[in-house]
Length: 471
Image (tube, rainbow, N blue to C red; front, side):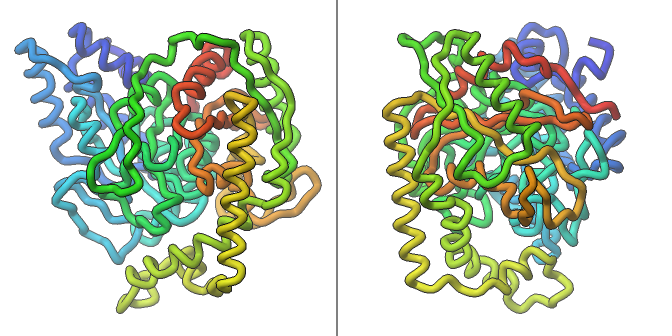
């Protein structure tokens, strides 16, 4: 391929196929993406550092192809990584001057697994300070912009990653998710992302780890098949992360038809907070598409979400568990090294023991509610965000006539972190002002195969496939 446009908007699966057929070399692919970073990153600020060995690794990958070596499923394909995930001999600075110049000795398990499949580490991507906020902005590397509209955010905390993939700087990446952070940025830039069942992808080599029971590492890409391929490589215990103990096997065979007719419920509330009518309409459109695909679909309510508002439950739990990690990180550091979100976290009052215990019980009720739901349904279809990507720095929103603060953007995503359920974010619509609108597919525990299959069906009939920012 001579046209670089045709290189940097191919998905990872296609690039790997082309490399195996010797239609294109890893060197051409890596160079095309490095050129794309050089061209666009000054305006988007998604990439914070480039792996210095990327071209050297590409040359080695090309030599292996020419020798006829056995090739891994991602052989010669570049990938990017959120800068809270350790990368051996490559800067990992966690969005803070406190960690400026930090170079890990070892790769995180997730990075090592993509490399083991033949992937080439291309670059590290921006994030909020300590991975803690819904916008990607910090004192060390500044603010990331949405490639669809530079005046808007690509989200957080994996916002640099989402912006890089949407803009064609990378075909595939790794993000992390505490409450929204791979699915929300995916929605704000119109890419696909997966938060798997808690523990299926080890968190070894990722910071912060607290609260560990809510954190996830997940793939971000431009196609559902890339999510499936990545997840097949990333999942499984590593012997180091105690939460990562599931031996359930997964392969990338998302095209396999189920043995029975699937049943999906859809909802945009109540229980998630207010939702913009335009976003709600996209979810309903997706529900109709599923019906046309032969899936049983009906509107539902999950009463556990109405009894216990998941965002409130999360707020009462995570402050108590995350705050000590922040205090340890900033100990002995000057005030001008600490940005606004860490300061906000440190200023929050501790949850009383009574409220903490009640929140723990509420989280169990939410799990029970979803368990009951999945006795009747194979998946849940809902929105990811209540609005499309917003302007930088917005603190309050008027959504469907209700004024809410920015934390409410997590209303439909945080229940999956509390319960550990898997969820996919994928584009299925466009707002009147041209911004992507994603839907969220939620599965039962360990049921990634089911939601990836449903997502692939929706992708096949989507009217937004192949849309990219005009840059």
